Image (cartoon, rainbow, N blue to C red; front, side):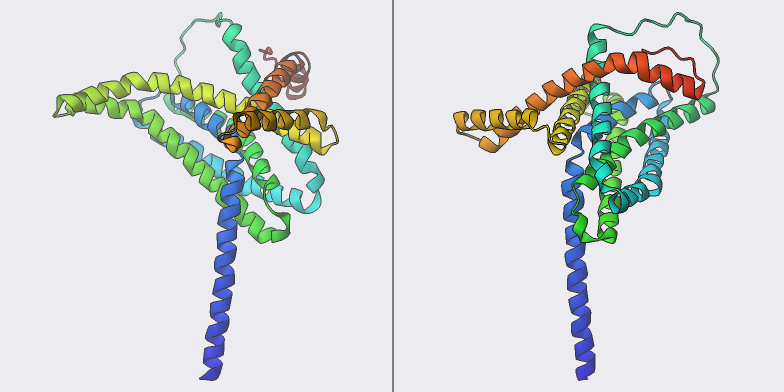
Length: 323
């Protein structure tokens, strides 16, 4: 009997340790996932365009296919790559983060640039017959490729915010939980966004009360404005997060002046306001990070146009003109 009690006591102790580890994994995953806000918001802002032009009945299946592709990207490719990186080349994490931050700055700055210099309209105005199934397959593949780039940045950001002393299994579990959680949040939100106008139309048509029908019409009118606002927020988040990553990377490599100057200005403003100091310091830091990210991204546009795109085109055999 005493042996059984001792065994039960050991089992209870193991359960407590396991529960503590699970709690620690969840906490690390939540904290690390929050750091990837810029890429996450942009992912949510970009994805709805891939279902534009399809029948309403195909919207949710397309979003589901992209979400499954995103989970495969994260769990089967990026998670093992992140663990190998953490185990054998942790010194590469900061340069890879800066590479991803450069991508975010470039993408965000390019969107701002094209507000003032829009793309030239396509000369070919002919309408071609396209098989809807083939078009859907192409759209899904394109979305998954775009998601892979954003997911790589998200997983690298998550990895950089995990405690490396916790062990590989806890690190793997935290990466998996954060990656899946972000995917569910992004594509669950995308599913709600792309079906909101259909829900509004349904309310406007079948609502028994005039207030219900008015609500439906309001949702239909509101969604285009919401999508524009989401694109603006996504672009701003890309530039802010990208600039923050680059500045932090420069600080890690010994170029402390820009990072220190921004944080000093944030402290000065927060102390001058003397209210909500934490929020004010964060807002000022984000503002200057965004200004830096926009300037850096604008500098990358000619580099991408005249150097990177032609090199990629030469290596892949493509002849697409740079934008």
